[in-house]
Image 1 (tube, rainbow, N blue to C red):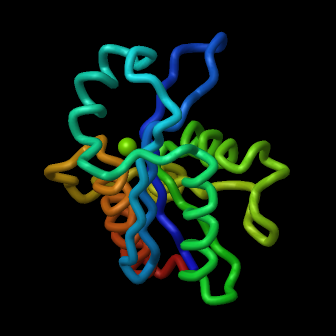
Image 2 (image 1 turned 30 degrees about the horizontal axis):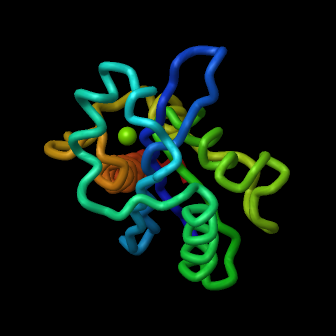
Length: 166
Ligand SMILES: [Mg+2]
């Protein structure tokens, strides 16, 4: 099963850990998961995050990272129905760090899961960087971004198949 993920996170340079704020995951059938962390401090956020991310977190209850990790693992395994999950993000390098760190280290990722995330940006680049669908409302909300990731992937997949790429 293909999963599209997005995270919002705190990034403050090399002296501070990259810290998860929220995560959205959408599966290939459109199932949705959205969770907000209680393990970050708003005062640690940059002015940009305070202006562009925090106001759009929504009213979801905030959960400790360890609880988020359990819910993500259970949900992904349930949606996968025994198949190996495949994760896709958009400019996803930092998202993958905070994703893996929910579980501890990269080595602690759930058994059977890939230890890498595929990137829609690389997929687009390989197809000559076509103009991707507009996102519209909700940019920088992790669930809205994850939903857009699925749209962008579906667009590229269709484009590749009409070009006879596979
Ligand atoms: Mg985002």
